[in-house]
Length: 439
Image 1 (tube, helix red, strand yellow):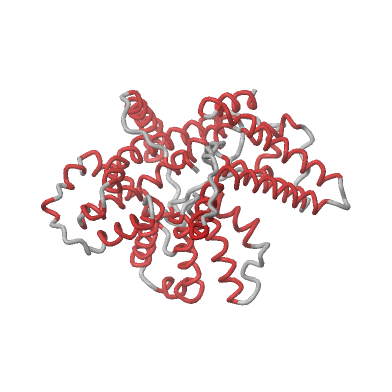
Image 2 (image 1 turned 45 degrees about the vertical axis):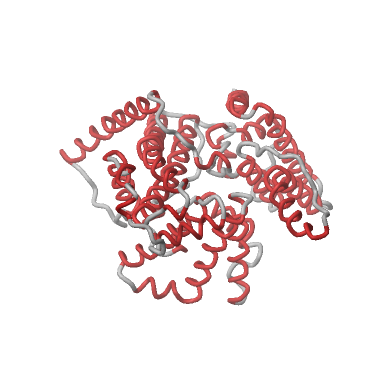
């Protein structure tokens, strides 16, 4: 039933790519089975399986990008190639990484191979996290495929997390998306300094609550079905270094790169130069994973550069600074990086940076940015920022007595209110973009 429901869910958005999803499931199931049985050729089967996964991803996601680069280089010799446009299948980046992690874990004998294709296909197609993560490794839910009791407490926990994610997406991300899209849609020579900063502030909140909201909805549905999906966000804007930011942002992706690329490359076990190379390569590929464009690649290079700088000594300096100062440093670098992530092109990103630095000759009074800063936007931005930068205390005092009773009663009321307002907003047809849909 879960497999059938997941395939219907996927077909609702991309019916023509259902066979590709099933092909990916069959490929990884078959290679995993052969790896578990073939002692002499285990490594060869692993290489073939990983290469096939990457080949599918490269064809659908990167063929047009690399052919464009080739055409630019070959233009003087008039040897360009004209390839048909390839549509990017929903969620291919996520279910490709799922398949690779499964094959490597079977090869390492960290997990037992799944002998039932039905069960494995259900894992590959699980609808809550299929199109936008978190990246769920087979090892994380292997024991729950056969036995997954769902007591009322777990069902209620899942409902709460789902409603939290829905409210984050609809009541925060969607509200700030309108000014973010407006200001990033303007020609940069028409962008004054206040408008540029308002645009990137809105986008920074939008991308956090868009993706974290979806992840929370997926994790919540997982609990309702008896699956334990890994956490994906932990207040990343409260980080006090870029290193800490990547321990809190898109945790399932950063841990995937750590376990299946960074550590196999040697991690930080070699020389300092080797460690810097490993970090740079990992984040170059992290940027490329997000999208086939120079802006995404440079976004990955941007984060890799600051991770290297922090490892080279800046991290020790940040640890001695007041917390608010190091937190402001981190948030500033992250926001500057988001310009690359959001911009349509490198010239667009450079122009936006110039506007943020006040290098435009525009008079802010001639650009009525205030009309895009309504009360609802200001409220969503303030609430989203406050919740994002707040650092939870390490040790919390237990709550008991009347206070505990009030908190226990207030939580379902607040969640019910958030759910009703979210549903009303969606029913009204308000602006509802989905950033990670294209990845």
